[in-house]
Length: 249
Image (cartoon, rainbow, N blue to C red; front, side, top):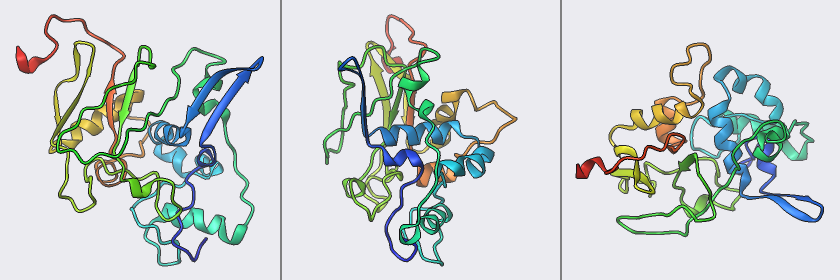
């Protein structure tokens, strides 16, 4: 792979797309496209130091740009490292901690279920998406947009998202966005596309990290905007108010 433009998987979790756990013949846990869910969790959970050291044992080498060239002049360090390790069918030894999946993590403490819901491809100027009724009491909602050409192909990196540059030419952008859950809106006032630092700050706070001075994070404004633009809505503290839409008060 070191002399191709193929995009090697990022992390040992990339090897598992669908997970089903059965007990006494009955399904107790099902997850489709689970690898992207775990990727987002690792992106937010791993400190910068952990990402550059221990996480390498999980075949985790974070991309630093969107190129897929894996030859020696490659500019994407993460892509290059993964390609060298897997060059010409070399066996790669890696660790896959099962406790990264919510089902196994929940064996020791109650946790939320990992779920990824894909929408159909759309070309609307304005769009509304609905959380499926099958999701009960959601606490965390992550939203990202990705061009269909990056899905199910070996020549595109499936872990680079296009939320802030929908068409790849910087001409189709999200202007404002927020989530409505019941009668409550998150955030109370719309996110605006020109103020991405606020969106990043809320995303980092998924693990209460924005005021953690002891450990670095993998996300900075530059790679958040260009590579990992994920919008996070925190539903952990649902407030019941008469009029939840501040734009109508």
